[in-house]
Image (cartoon, rainbow, N blue to C red; front, side, top):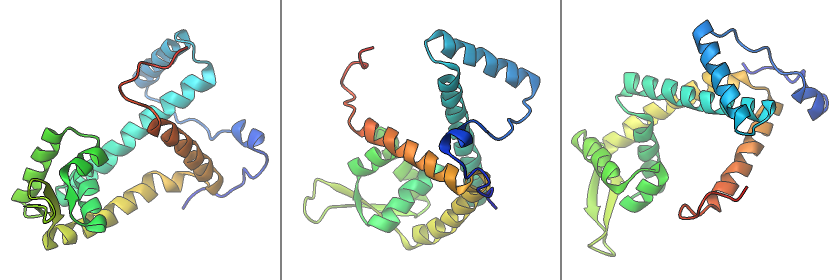
Length: 196
């Protein structure tokens, strides 16, 4: 179960009263300290450096834990589950749409689709509207396996993410991520880095 909202005071009080930090294995702590100092040298302050390092490490760790468990229980990667879940909920989809969704190149997506086709989880067909356009469609076996894998996924997210946060923390984290996501959607990948 998630932590209760004992931290229901002002946001300033909440921000100033963090949960105790876990004890790190000495080498990991040393490496993290070195990385922290590097960010300080780049102009980050202590709070900024810590916020980025915590986000970066937990995002990588969560993806790794979820990916390993899905592979172990269903022989599907997290990217496979995301692709299959999209096809299950949205129906036949263009290859370009799927590549954008998964943030992969068309060639990488083709390899992934071919692997799922060999397991008879998806199939590819020409579009009825445009025979030059290829659509990916989930199969009945794909739907069955996706349903089971999403149940595993939901349990993992709850145990490793939601149960560690109070409702207030979930709201704050969700709001921060929405702001970042909105900003990223406006970024043109062809542009140079922002001016300092």
